[in-house]
Image 1 (cartoon, helix red, strand yellow):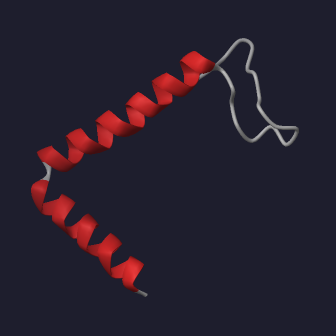
Image 2 (cartoon, one colour):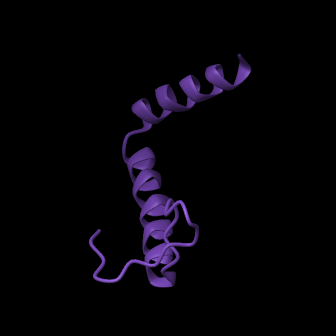
Image 3 (cartoon, helix red, strand yellow):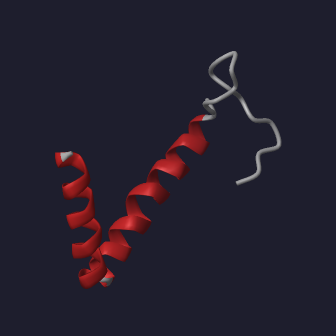
Length: 57
């Protein structure tokens, strides 16, 4: 994503503050992984098992 006038929230410039940008990114992060997980159930099971195993350690 390229922004003509990015607005940052912190002095460290590590977080974008542009409202429309935040919504667009949140939607992409929510929709695309969910669609992939639904379309690829075998791989989704493997990924979720790996996440579950990692959180136990």
